[in-house]
Length: 263
Image (cartoon, rainbow, N blue to C red):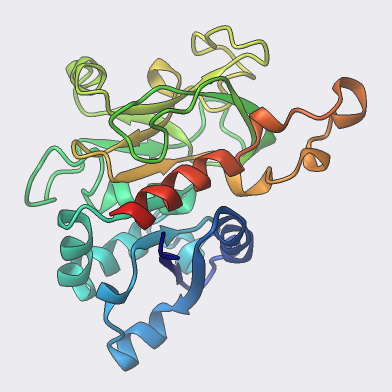
């Protein structure tokens, strides 16, 4: 099995790239953090990579809205590279700010082949404040290469002010469900559905949606930070309940890297 290479995009304001790199390395990939300025200046070919990661942070200081200017990079300056990467079936992951960018670039939910219609977005949390807390996720999608075959729960933190997943037409929720594009949902710690109740659902997202994938399943975006739970000792309740290795966020990265290595 070859070691896949992962391109981690770094925009001004990105601050979760090192954690993403650590997760990918632990999962068996070879990550490279590359600033967008370097990609522009050197015209680095994206074809040399098997994974594309858009990490969390506050790209471009969230000017004009969270993830919007990074989305413009994907839709304009790097349009050809982004389209080729997605359409080739390579694995793409957007975390928090990266998820916001993928949605605003039209790459998720990916219902428009030309990526011109977002259809869904992430807006202000329902409580109108920044949420920084641990949450529990249930992997749902067997279509998504990042969650396929994952069972049980995943614990990881959220840290965002605009994480409320909403859609232009509520009928889209049924379409996403039928197409198996709802990749992850928020639950209570015991696995019971959050039913859009706070704090299990920290932002009021419709249908407890924490992450969605595109129709092909190779592009995933999620608001929580699985890269922040790579080791059992990182969990704030580790002393009370003991180690829970099966609930690590690392499992998601292992899935994506395994897919990339076999593709």
